[in-house]
Length: 297
Image 1 (spheres, rainbow, N blue to C red):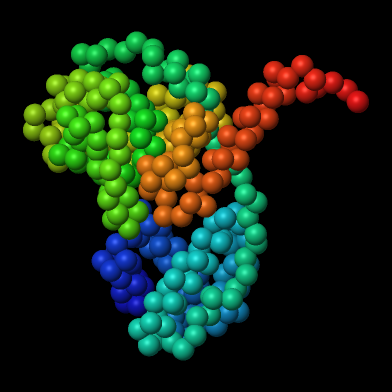
Image 2 (cartoon, rainbow, N blue to C red):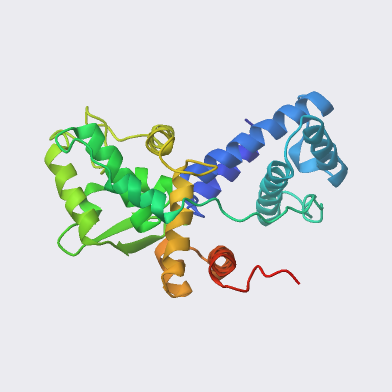
């Protein structure tokens, strides 16, 4: 990869403290950009000589490959961040990606799992003497009880899970730490898991039978395996449990600012989408319950 790209990735990792997931995403986009420019303009293409039409050509190429508007938008944002960095370093005079417009995204509501389905799943029996069954059930309970991201869960350290005070510390986006309280059910499950957790485990809280930390892809497979066929949801993912946490908290009367802090949202706007979900549920209940809601005019 071009040295300028490597320098940019080092910058966002070490100076901006972006997560490993974000850095990997930027790296993936830049490799694709580099492959495109090498093919379209030759292997000696100079990234500092890019003009907006070069980027437009890439956008057009991505469209012909069937890439979604969301994916293309993200890749353009990667270039925008790259050339903003190069401007700050005095390598270029203007950002060729700054004013490039991309297709507007349709706002979609998060996919959630209905509370009754989660309750049925979490109340179902499992082998409390089996390490894997206990760990997998705890993963579902922790994701739903805390609203943490999948990456935060895989990075969770054992020393940061305190059953005495019933709180845990996670490392969120841009390496920002936050404390999340939890209830007695999760506390008891954590204690059970720790009795089965291999003695030679590493520092991560969630581990494999051999003691090594579970990976992000394996976590997603665990969640999908636990949810598939047991809940009615269009997406059986860790993120669906995070969405469900926020929605159920707001439906139960939690303050939106409290949910924002628990989820680690930098902006309240990111949390406000869940109020739309809550209102949609309110509308649904009204239509079902009010004697005149469905009266024909």
